Image (tube, rainbow, N blue to C red; front, side, top):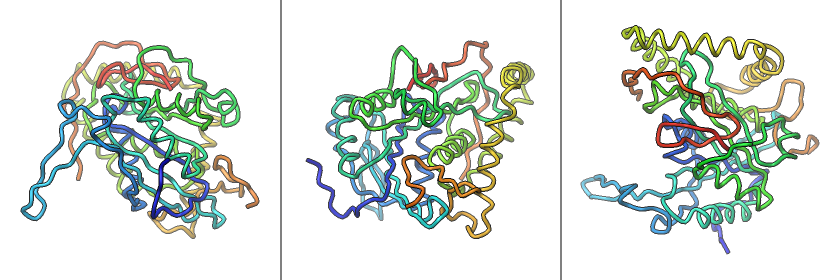
Length: 344
């Protein structure tokens, strides 16, 4: 039995998780959850025992000085809680349980069971796991984000892709399946990171994940400096690519392929979703950077299972690669650190 002392009763809680490592190309997913934790000043209430799940020769602890005293930080997974004061735009708050850590080295089933134990005790309504994979996508275009689930009913209800992936998986895939078997609704959001500029950070991919999470949950997420960081990142990659004709030519070929494939999708639902996000962000009663408003402009609640009544780093030089098949977008795991195939 997991006992949570000091954690108040949560309101319509959703668990949002991301893990550094195989499922985190460009550190985009873990950075997105870190952004949520930072902007909403999350309060850590639990941490998994590092001895149970990590090989310290793979994920080594780090030593640092704190006021002249040497201390050690161990790789682990921490849980924090944040409250969105006006989640639906009508004064109703909502809580998010944020899970951020390193992909465990061992005992994945026990690891997922422990996280689901917290979810059960906290009354979590849905689990959303963020991931990032490498793909043949140009850095000059919007970052593709796939929303997938293994639950056919949930896929139909929320208009999500149903995962058909077969192959090697990471902790994101294992956790999603554990949720499915436990009867907990679970969704994976996957951002595609350009494989030719895979070095972290990638604020543009983190921003794309946050925007998609906004759409899924119907809450307004404060962006802070993330939009500016994303623009600076793209400008830096633009400049580096311009210095190498081979890279510039390759990027152009990716642009042409992307534009041709997505031309039919340049209207309809995608534009409607972007317009709804714009309306949420321009609410005159919500000050800049304040996480207070998330309902749609017409008063509809975009959230899940809600009662309608009730310091930049310049990117490293991109390395050109031969074009290859992009990872599947129906929920994915990178096939190795920095390469991808998709799965949910």
